[in-house]
Length: 200
Image (cartoon, rainbow, N blue to C red; front, side, top):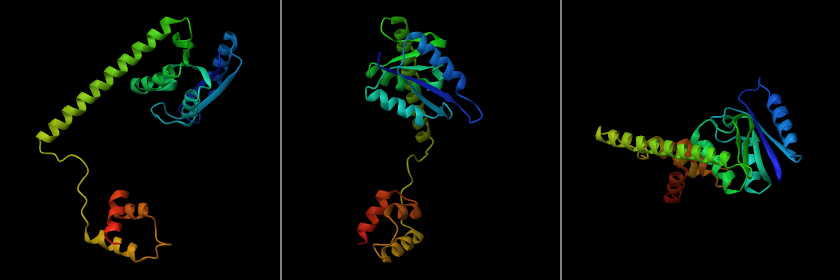
């Protein structure tokens, strides 16, 4: 077995990862997994981007881990969609997932654990399909009510013309970036860049 990554997460700073850490390290010791690396976060599970989780998944992609062990599935992700994304990455890189408290173990020779994960992934895909259908239905209904969808059309108002003119009058070496200009004009960087070229 390659190195094992244990993932720990608590939601707030007044909570501690200690109980999870001791439990998972003891489990790894019982399995004879000596090469263990810890990845930890103190953040809500609803956040898809987390420093510890991102580092763990980066090591998964680099082929540095053979298994990921966590206390419960909701430590990894709160939504089925997020979990399915994580599980997909683990499976694509042949990394096992072990969740001792929930009886999940996808290491070699445990087809029952793999079946559980395939069921979760199927449910997540079904959930994504429902969300897509609801979104489409909502857009159709909004259009039927006459709602204008999408970003409002950019209008070069007098105020914006003044900001642009002031920016163009500045010394090119000291004036703010186009991104800063876009922020002032409340438009995209692409639009601001186009306007500066037109006025050049």
